[in-house]
Image (tube, rainbow, N blue to C red; front, side):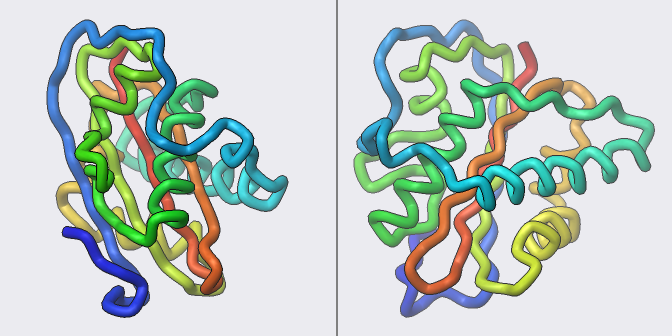
Length: 172
C-alpha cells in the first residue's frame, strides 16, 4: 500500500517476510546516494532505542536479542531515506525494488529475512512504532521470530516532523 503524506494517517505500518537463500551481488542498494544516508546523532540514537525496545520484547518471550549489523542498518536507513525523499510508504519502492532486492544489491547473504516499516509523527516516535508493531500479528511475528538473529534499523525524518522506520531481519 502506497500512501502520500496527504492521505496518510498518523501511524502506518507494513510487514513482509520470506525465506530466501544465497543472495549475493556487489552493487549498491536503491537510488539514494551514500551522502544522503548519513544519519544525525538523534536518528542513530532513535534507531538504537527502537532496537532496545524490540530486544526487551524478545527477552520477555525468552528469545535472544537481535544483533545490529551495520550493513543491514545501511539498507534499512536507505529505504527510510528513500520513502521520505519520494513520499511513499511501502516495502517495494517506486522502482519495483523489494526488501530482498535491496539486501541482495548490498551484497548481504541470508537464508531468510523480513522487513517491518512504519511512519508516525508522534512525540515518542520509537515507542509508538514499536508498540504498533507489537500490536500487529505480522510485525510481532517478525520481531519475535527466534530464527532471526541480526537486524538493521533505519530511521529518516521527513519535512513534516514524521519519522520513517525500516527494520530488516535476517538469519545468517
